[in-house]
Image (cartoon, rainbow, N blue to C red; front, side, top):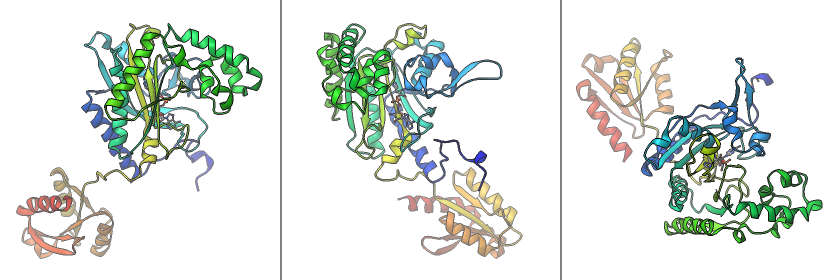
Length: 419
Ligand code: HAM
């Protein structure tokens, strides 16, 4: 057993096969759907200058307690990205995408880092698939990102996600709501949990998110009574579009989300198999973010989806994308020839293994049984006659095939097996 020094850092994971291939399959599903919806793939650095992420909100957990922030040897103040939205907003501004024809649709897949308390479905490094849509104020934009995310969940084989949405209002109507909330919760201050007493001064909307003070928050004012006409029309439009696309959606008056950049629409999607408070994906509208970062004011909306969580919630493994494998075994003295043939097969687009441990034919056949569907045997009289023996391990049959015909033969066999 390795010493403590050489164990994984807390809250991180090694992902080995076959789960690693499941991950890759999920990533492919996500990107295929993003492409169908017209999203371009963007990759931003895994670390940014710290002020970029401070824009997700000074009083958020992500910034206050969970960031992997460090000063590098050159004195730069950097942070491992805890989420993608602020990084993509920085890239949108810096690469002049505000001047490109709008809307601009961007998506990403990659690791995010948050020093959270590790528990089921909560890691210190997780992988997010996210999409950000810039340049449209329309409720159709909010609906579009939600529909893309729901589509990915559905394509992965998970049915009946619970889609919750709310509007936290805009700069016109939210201040009045905020005041009403403060007034209400101030009157109950004594009964609030410690965290909420702090939130009350820093970020009163977050009290609605509290898992402890459920009785108190049940009597809190509803933001719907404070929406301005534009905010009301907006959320109605979002819900109608999502509903018309055949996705069940309901309003949750307590949904506020943990990041500060949101305005109007916020949404969160879970699944009964994950339990309460564990979201498959979440997101919302954040029209003010680019302006807060010194860019033009551009409306934007997006989501982030935890791929570990989605994978853990799937009722069945994703279709295995592994190709059928061939194993090129050799008789003594034909190791190089076998390796050469495996290399040629790979160049022809086939998945081929060859022995590199100088094993006996018997040991090679045993190895082949573990990892391949066919064995090609190089050597002996067959080889003298420019041929190899091809054994189909599933069927237990064997044929001698000349090298001229080998690729055509294997191509046919592999295709038959795929049907
Ligand atoms: P978020 O809700 O903080 O939003 O994270 C998005 C998703 O990432 C969550 O719903 C969850 O599936 C996954 N996730 C978050 N933290 C963890 C963790 N510690 N372990 C495992 N999975 C996790 C955002 O990050 C926003 N940037 C979403 C967004 C995009 N809003 C607008 N555009």
